[in-house]
Image 1 (cartoon, rainbow, N blue to C red):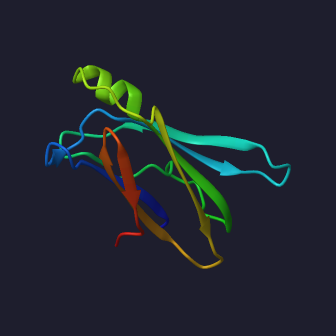
Image 2 (image 1 turned 45 degrees about the vertical axis):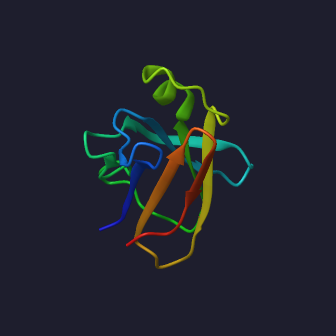
Length: 114
């Protein structure tokens, strides 16, 4: 089964970042990006499955976009980065990607999770 998931943690608060809008896109051969799915993180800061049911995970470039501005605005916090985009490469034969985002008003980091 192919899967792409994410987990967003608000490192300034030390809590999961709930209700963060997330988009998943795949880059087409033309260079354009095609929307595969969108959603919001749950109470635990997770989107457990962003890849739509039946959607394959072919090799190529994928991009997750997080709407940090709306997340911080809901908490009446100003942030430096209104949008965080994470572009990652899927190689042939890979089937699962977990892309965590550690977010604060003035910085972020990511890594490939398990």
